[in-house]
Length: 209
Image: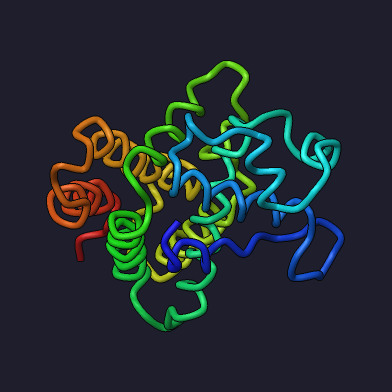
């Protein structure tokens, strides 16, 4: 995995403030191997050896290799946390939402291989998948709910729809663009037509004064 993606893998640790733990070591090792060897060719034994942990420790945290695909959502959320700290609370909520979309799509295009994102998206369709992308506890949803609510309070965004519904529909638009990008094997840039389409979806909720 490219250094930019590896450096972004800084996950929240349950009940611990330690910078490194077994779960984090497994995830770091996994994504580095996925980048080097590809998901299919990476084995659990490879991950265990690279992470320097026992097999029992691996299975304590993950049921199998496919379960690690959902941790890409954690990587994305960490990137959103970084961007959130840079946002001006006095700025336009609409512009900030658009900023997050453009920055995130650009970051994904540069640092996340298409085949790995494709594998993660495919895992969400598995009946045994954890549906991490639509988990409402994700920071992705928290930051977008915060910005939409702020926009509604300031009269920038319509109150004809609830905050939840606006974020839900907006998230659907972003996911659809990521799926389409993967379907075309990253042939077209994510920052361009995809970001314009997402912006058009957001625009339908913007109040015209």
